[in-house]
Length: 261
Ligand SMILES: NC(=O)C1=CN([C@@H]2O[C@H](COP(=O)(O)OP(=O)(O)OC[C@H]3O[C@@H](n4cnc5c(N)ncnc54)[C@H](O)[C@@H]3O)[C@@H](O)[C@H]2O)C=CC1
Ligand SMILES: CC(=O)C(C)=O
Image 1: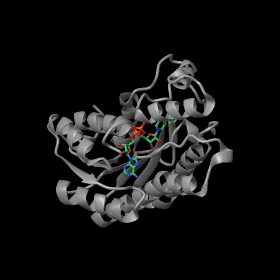
Image 2: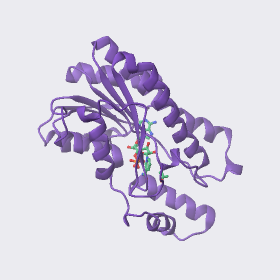
Image 3: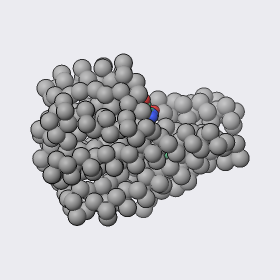
């Protein structure tokens, strides 16, 4: 068990599936009460059943993280339903597979609003709430290996994940005096719907057979297998726990050996 997690309250965005669901399941195992936030309300209801079956209290909230008022409303909802907030996990994000030459203004606007806007509003709303509650807190956001190395065909996605690292560093410096730590996790190749979509788009662009791009990337992992949401959740549980109290401003790689920093 991770130190100091039992009884805490965490909000997880993008909790309806994939890595966000994996984080919710792991935190529930650790006794964390959960506010589950996503665009997909039906899928959230299923994750709600899964986590409450582990004996924790939980609530769901439908929100579009690119909308500042939605994120603030989600944080207010968490505190109203669960009594407080200790950990904010800005996990939701989208991928975008396009050669640089094909990126259009609408593509740029969409991914910036979700991947950078969503994290910005999440950091802002959580820090304001921690201060209003008069408590310390932890803010944890999803970056990526693509936040350390720019990936071909994932140029704008990579740019947003580099930006998450920059925001993490700046926010860590701004909020340290309030006792708020701000960190990020950087997964590698995780077998979620996001990669099903990335693989499909690569096929459309390059003509590679479906499944080939994912297979090629997984073959490049030193530990020899694709990452699971539970692998990512193990790092997020550590960053949510008291064991990470002296860590701030970091974007920590968890990728089985792809990017070495
Ligand atoms: N799958 C992978 O290999 C990797 C993923 N990541 C990052 O981890 C995070 C989670 O990824 P996955 O679980 O793989 O993705 P996913 O696509 O399986 O799940 C993302 C979830 O976020 C939700 N979401 C998307 N846009 C939203 C919005 N505007 N408002 C509210 N919710 C929204 C979706 O409904 C979905 O439930 C993302 O930030 C992603 O960039 C980072 C590195 C690797
Ligand atoms: C989805 C993602 O972040 C990568 C690099 O696979």
